[in-house]
Length: 428
Image 1 (cartoon, rainbow, N blue to C red):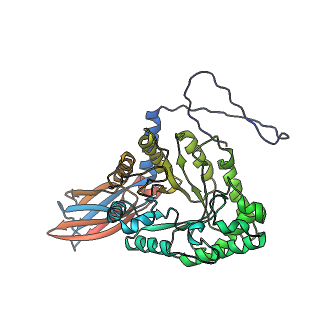
Image 2: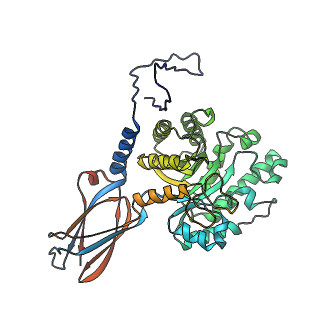
Image 3: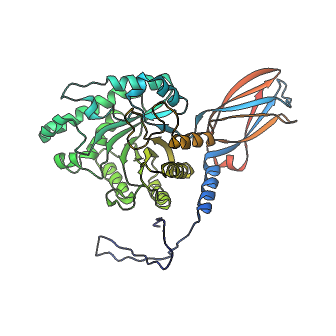
């Protein structure tokens, strides 16, 4: 089945065309269905999907040591870690700015370093590596229990390389890349949750042009050999953002993944799908259909660098994209690309220079609030039971009946949890 989506700004008769670059192939089309949606219907579908895939019914019973239910016990439930990671990029400015630290750590539990891990930052001159900024950022993240994505080992865009790289022979380049992969990945092995191994491999081909068409596949082989403990992402843009960019369509993305996996010794490489998600005007039907297509691979999918071009509609569009992402069952994580700099962010800032929220920051806060970052307070019934619908994640429950008692539990996705509550019995 082929699936696609588009938004129409006009009404009337439409003609659909199907074409292939292979002129020897006949195209047969059957069972075409065009399903229109109003904005209200689309939003309703998102809400239903979120309830189904991101939440579970939980029933907590407070009992005494003899197993007797305790009515009117005071209960509070606080989410400690969300089931779907939502994070934001940071840079070294956070290391010396307490206001930035306080704003960030009160919201996020996952991050990506904006530029500090990139090759042009860590090896300005050949053979002289400097990981001091990365090390300091990683210490900060560990101190605050924030998970880190490794970004990035290599980038195929010729504009973003160490200057000394351009003069290398193919043999010298091959050695430099192998050294880069081993040096970076072995240094931080076991400290990260993922690696962006090759960035923008569908739009650019610097390494392929100098080392052959299998260069990237070989890089993933080397990366897997160096660190097989976490997923290895292929990070690309305009795969879900813009249907007009033919370089990185979902079909071409999946083809590149298959090429990498088909390379000798790559069958067991833990690949994952990184979608940069640099949006202008979002096309939600296309975005959903594209993620559906990519999800057929069965690989983890993250939105790795989410931002929206600056405009009066930026907050509205960010809200639309975040909700669409959260409502899709195959999206496993979101990182917002809004690392703060005093001169301005890459494309989208969440705060001003005093760390007061801008409209985009309010959108993010509202989403985090909706998705479970608040404390739920109530009392048990006559049977000692307290029931709630909770977003997946890790929680701490505090029950007070004469004296307080705390327990921790985790809410995860199960088919059964959609049909009947997950039951916890707590002895007070």
